[in-house]
Image 1: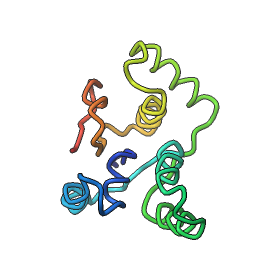
Image 2: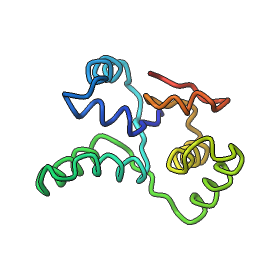
Image 3: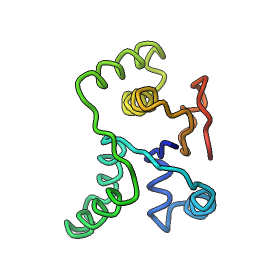
Image 4: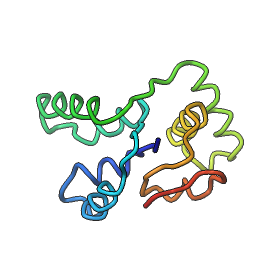
Length: 127
């Protein structure tokens, strides 16, 4: 399993993104189950605000088909705030929810263009 971060997913979906070509190349090398959480789902859909509800709905359906979506519960948010405190807020809270999901799901690889994940020992960053 590999976790897919918002930065990578948006670069993959938006052809004008400066990292689009790199995201396409990387995506061709990922053959295992791809996981996101509802934070990534929300952030990705928000990137398409103003493009029309139909576009958003279609994107939502595609994401649900392509990814295993882990939905956060109260305990996950509690774990995320503890991670946030542990890093003294040097990593944003949304990224801490991702780390919480990764820990809970025993995922140690993430595909991302967010350099904050390089601060985390024990995970492999693909970028």
